[in-house]
Image (cartoon, rainbow, N blue to C red):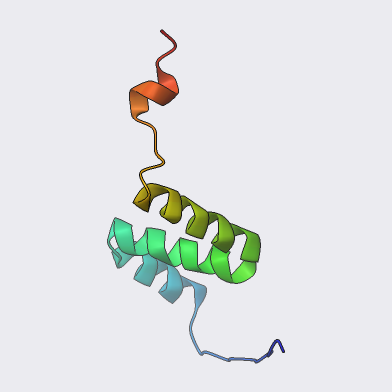
Length: 69
């Protein structure tokens, strides 16, 4: 069963922007990934599949993907 909840936080958009701007790039990337995952189960599944492929060595080098020779 899916649960729905409401959360009220007293914070301005400017405070959110400032906090995000202070984050390291890797932290910002993680935040965006988490937001997208929460909004899209398909996106989360694609990330899981990509991580599985990477762990199993199912990857291509830059040259394999972009070198047309």
